[in-house]
Length: 304
Ligand SMILES: O=C(O)CCC(=O)C(=O)O
Image (cartoon, rainbow, N blue to C red):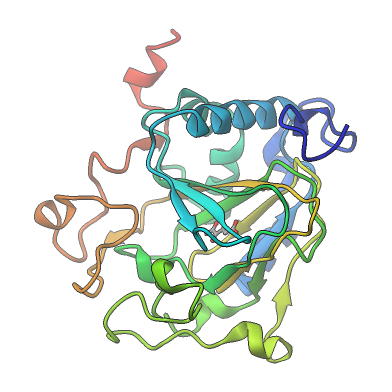
């Protein structure tokens, strides 16, 4: 079956996990945790059962057929691709995935927190071949947070070679927090600042790749990349026959606090009212960020 056919299912691929393990958390080992601390990113192979991938594909189809807000990068150009954020609240498949699959416990193990809250979920959908790069950036300048117990799990529903994968600058989570890129200006300048010069401008990593320790991997659906949101990352462009449907799930633990960002632009995703209910330095607790672990009683009551 062609990879670009609409009804292609990543769960039908050979090479994905065939049966659930009794203890999925054992798939993330102490060596992985040490590497995550050092590099700010790890790729763990074959950790998601095909049924979870099917659930995500159904969720993506529901999002694409919904009136959920979508943003187009490189709009109107050949390399255009779509991004859509925070569908958890309205797309039941994403809720099921976050509560029921092992993804949240994987993140809990990585950030060493048994309490977990959802920061966001975000799809990046590169279809039709020849999609552009996702510009290099860190997530932290866009998010009104401080603390270390937060991680993103990046999951591709399609097989990818390492050039098409999300790429990371190892160790950069320990360095400077740069400004973000400006999504509306990416086709002119992928380092154009998001804010009004309150943070240092992003370096032009793409023009100087040899100066950075860039990591990426060949991906088979079922593999997951876990990353610290302070690590510089950018998405490889896709080839002419490629399709790259990826979702990132971001969860945080106990030490994450509310922090202000420059007032010249809103943070991402939009959370109106948040700055009126929290002071900088307070724990990030708000209806914007639902508790995921332990699973709240009212959620458990749905099936008990
Ligand atoms: O998938 C991509 O191209 C971008 C992903 C990304 O920036 C993220 O997950 O934070």
